[in-house]
Image 1: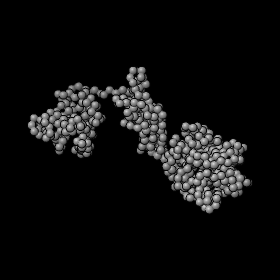
Image 2 (image 1 turned 90 degrees about the horizontal axis):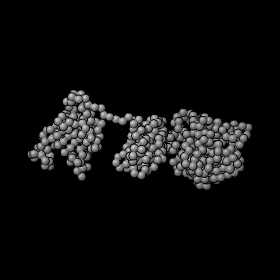
Image 3 (image 1 turned 60 degrees about the vertical axis):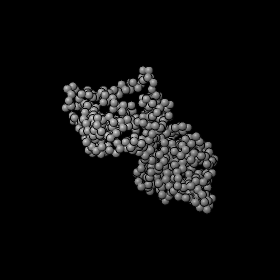
Image 4 (image 1 turned 120 degrees about the vertical axis):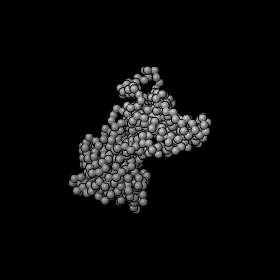
Length: 499
């Protein structure tokens, strides 16, 4: 009980002591000293004799007058680390010069004092000595190994016969809004981990360190969106020895935006992507998107008088044609996702119904033979055959075209994010990996069963957050143009897909 009360008092008194004596940085009243027997003080030393001035200040402050021994060290010493304090004091003091003996009030419970409530006191100046301190010799500089020596020792540690923990494996970094989350595999023998980071590649053990991590993951927060951060991790054993550094990873925190379509006249046109499909058949292809329907699309008919297009391939010209469209549509009193093909009324709906007001991952796949599949949240929901995409020349997000003259219609009411198109038919395993149990995997990040980022012909991440252009992240530059939309339609999605 006394230990916790004493440490609480120490923390409560520190701001007050800093006000009384501004050079004080931190204090430690160790339990081993029964609190008033020892006080260790770190100060920012600027002039000779400053340590002794601080000793007298403490002895003249309230009940701190009962302190028996005061040890003063420099501000770069961790006063909470008794091992470091002992080392610093041992190498820095000359007992004849740096020990101050005094006397004054003592604690009622101090049995060692010559008199009741009155006894001796000692102050120890463990600071580095500067010009003006009573010393005839020059004070030496502290020796530090340079980075080349540190890296050489780290590299050859095992050759020197020392046992060092191996590097943590499988380090990953996932960026989100103002933060990066790190994960790695637990290492046998590790009691904690250190994370080293920098804003440039080449992280080493001399980089900025985050220490004392007791789990196999860490979230680095309060970061600048758009800035790339680089990381390595090392394990620490029970003796406090740091192991080998892991391989380096990096990630860029980014606020994940989406576009909010009003269901009236908002849409994005990205027709250029159709030129990257097969010129004669337009097949095969896969379209993936995340969609958040805002309103309930319901009615009394089976399908699909009330419908909203999430994305669509169309052919326009003398005879406009619907080729491949994905709707969120009414099915009686419920809602389903529907694929619509070339033939009139060729609607194929999902097996299950889906409510509005939440995010869904959608993958529409048509192979080179025209066989189609629709996946929602990683699960196959519909199939069809005899699909066509011949002479496709339009791709739109948030609506589809009807009638001669390419009339925009069936506008989507809700949010859309992360639209991607491949010129291959993805597998079920690919779709499962992209859905990633609801966490989402960016289409540009080959991971697990998914390795088709090289087959992307259009990929819109929706991370602009402003403006009227939806940027294609592939080298094809199939940028989309926002129509009847402005910067107010950019909203935070909250998805934070893994890259």
